[in-house]
Amino acid sequence: MSPVADLVLRGGTIWCGAGLPVEQALAAWQGKVLAVGSDAEIAPLIGEGTRIVDLDGRFAMPGLYDNHLHLISTGLVLGHVDASPQATPTLEAVLAAIRARAAVTPKGEWIRARGYEQQKLDIGRHPHRTELDAAAPDHPVLLTRTCGHVSVANSRAMEIAGVTASTPAPEGGVIEVENGVLTGMLAENAQNLVTTHIPVPNVDELIAAIEAGGRQLLAHGITSCMDAAVGMIAGMDEIHAYHLAKRDGRLPVRVSLTLLGDPGSSIVDPCFRAGLVTGVGDEMLRVGAVKIFLDGSLGGRTAWMSRAYRGQPDNFGVQMLPTQQLESLVAEYHAQGYQLACHAIGDMAIDQLIGAYEKALAAQPDPARRHRVEHCCMSTPQQHARMKAAGIEPSPQQVFVHDFGDSYLAVMDEEVTRGVSPLKTWLDMGFRPGTGSDSPVCRTDPRPNLHQMLTRRTWKGTDMVAGEVVDNETALTVYTENGAWLAREEIFKGRLQPGMVADIAVFSHDLLTATPEQILNDTACELTVLGGAVVFDRTGT
Image 1 (cartoon, one colour):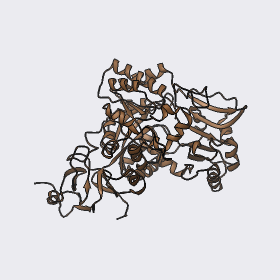
Image 2: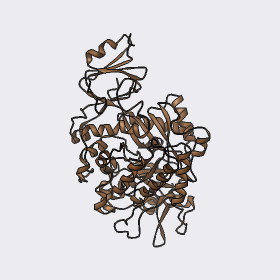
Image 3: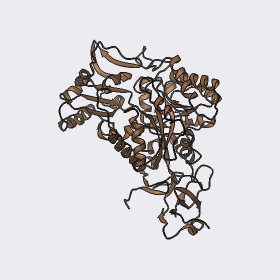
Image 4: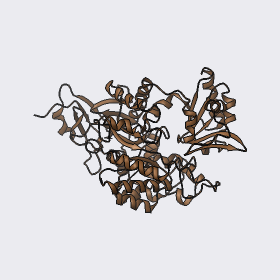
């Protein structure tokens, strides 16, 4: 006798995954997909206690998997000044927002702002320390670029940190000085000189951020994510917060925890001693990979490149770690059983990382480990061949091309930047790249991500390499099944088949047939299901 379904979706278009039939109805039981089929085939599974959702012709699919974001930061920045181009497109708008926050913030307390991109500001440059001083003379201010790799601090913040024009930059960091005067701009590890003086969120605040960020994801149909640098803000308290959030029902989405492994701030050792290695956990919260930062961002001119940035003949970006030290860390984490998912954007950083992975895999072969190159923006054909031979996977965020493609063209030669994140090339080679937002770098809204995969156009309409365009079903597969595969979770999520988790996103348009413009401008997530339970309903019913 078949069990009675807890939840039934019917009367719609249900895409279950690439190569699977498109169905009308789905039944869920005890958090898993019980059956899919026609309305008539699912009807016998409806009982007195079954919740029935009439899709009324809408489109349902597996819940989206954001393959790289920072969930705690996504929640925390909701309390920061929004300095994004959407909210503050001009320098005066940024400064006005900071002035407004200063007016309601006790003197001496920190003001955090995030989201500006200098190429999109009307001034076409980074804000200056003195401009922040004028906006908030009685507060320490830290304004962080959208990428998170560059910040501008005001004078009070620099004074608190003890940073002067003669302060030596830490290894892997930049303190910008012009004509013997601090501009306020700090890049990469130099940001730590200031951030170490900002109060660290406590566990309760971290849990609140996890909950707030997760609910934002659910509103977009995202049911799973990889938190890409756990430990960066509050060390092991973040591990504590995640487990308490799960225990108390305050973890809205499924999370793969990527442990920060950078020297000096790594949480890998205490996690390893506690047995928290890749794969430990359950279907809601699991330990994933270890992350090491190798370089910065392309738009911030800190990605480590083999060619100089436009107009800066001596700037090749920032190398974060010596090769020998990186190879030692990768070998150690690999031997401990961890998957690795390391940040590398520039071609030099990617090359350095591939070499470290190759050596670790040669010493201790494991073809199923699926070590990842996070972002992998400026990779070369030669590097792709090496990655394929070694079983190394690219882990891109295709929305970067949408949001930052024009900025890339502004700072680096067009011949290399137009081919950034070559999605179709990777797919044709047999790689299984996912996609995501890197929130709060980009917004969690999946529509620009999908639009870019279907068009290879930036937000301004600039055409990148059109040969890297994919079709609708491939884009959806990248955003679901491929994300699960990269995280080594494909056994229980990413497709809607009996026995898989019943994580479902319902959209207003059929994403298999909608045009890119319909997806970007006229599509909404209307319902999200996690583990067979409705966790978001745009109608509020």
